Image (cartoon, rainbow, N blue to C red; front, side):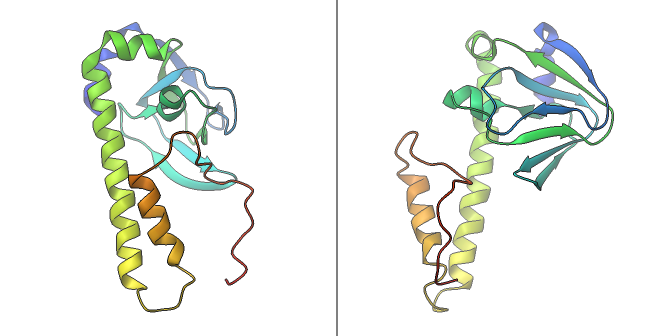
Length: 161
């Protein structure tokens, strides 16, 4: 994703002190960010799900593309520098190369998730029905109806588990 840095001249450079929260899960969609340097962590609820250190990593893109609140919290683990784009949609329209890089990154994430879920399904085939939902998740990722999925929702846990 370092190639994204070539398109950041129009962004506002922001300095983040360690501990600064950049995005808040559930918060209104807003700017798009690109990491220039430092270390950020991505949280779903209170669980750290990823650490971001690669310059050029994009943050807030899912919210921008879906027009929904931020899907995760992002905070600085160390002092960091990011580029901020207040009008992310304009950036993506003006710079089709950035849009293509973003699409590739999202496709890589989706491929990794599909591969992981398929492997889980294969490993636990024949071990009862408690992981039957994996097949349903895989199917929904292929035929996802727009705006109907709410990861981390308040749905009740499976009583069979």
